[in-house]
Image (cartoon, rainbow over all chains, first blue to last red):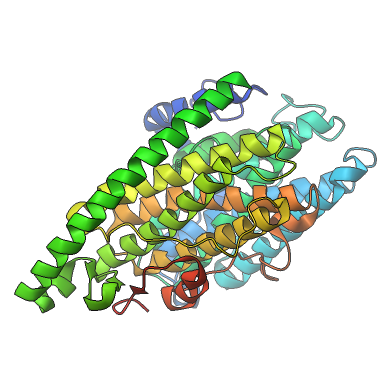
Length: 224
Length: 235
């Protein structure tokens, strides 16, 4: 488990305020992720609940796995924005409505997924938004905050997109798509707040669960 | 800016050339479809988008019908933004230009993707009618754009469940989030840095965007499309 930690390439490691550099690094992640076999094993215990108990509410195990994975990301986003909004002088007044709306949706997604999972829901994990010390001013510097916000939103979009195939043929697919497009609206808006256009190109790429977890791992306080 | 203007010109020239090719192609398909329908009406319905008597375009059935449905919406969006760039509204600033040029190029890429993926199963080029849009007015143009983008997002969200081929679902997924990025952008251009990009008028109390089926979406595009479109095999 520890073997993957030091060298694991993540979205965040590759982050650069320069959009072009970031696009390049995101594309590179696909090839790198293919080799990150340890990433899933590194996921915190909350994601590793045995599949025997996942038939709660009659959902197939595969669907429950996707919903738990989604809930983890929504917990992360919800707490991230809740903390930011509670931090004085972090968010300039002119952008407060944007981040209030983001916080509202992420909290709604958490409640929705908890409700869908019922007894199979996972509890919220502990987060470290400094990314193990890499972003010490995440809640003191608006640029750092929006850089991470942008990353989390794009990560969420790619994560939901990557799970669509696992939900095909189930009633959960449409709901997941309805969350996915809201995350994409968020992602575009945060990019605009940062002074960029809202997209990379005409087609958004998906990310595998392993790649998403590798990118999120530095922000999970329990670690890998 | 010079470079951007050059890119724009190239794109418009390309778009015009495409639309001329499209006209020829439409004429060809119309003739071919009519002959084909005379030969075997039921077989035509089973597979491909087809032009019926009276010029009505039927989207076909199965995954091809869903792809033709998306293709029709992308045709509409691409044609709209191409006209927006050709007739810039009053107050068309560099920031607006950057966003709308990007969106136009995406819609053209989406349209061409479906045209190519559908091949012989593609419906002909639709005739659009933007007579109700005041292209000189930023409010009218962006208001129409907002309608198209929000509708596109809802259409893709509702169409996912209709697709059987996982590769088509993946591709639709890679397009819908870009449509949602457009929707947020257009909404932000109308109401900067407000909650409007994902406003409570479009996102419900569970944090969900809309999902609409074709029979809910198509009536909303009818005012902008002259070609009658039928989706008899879709919900």
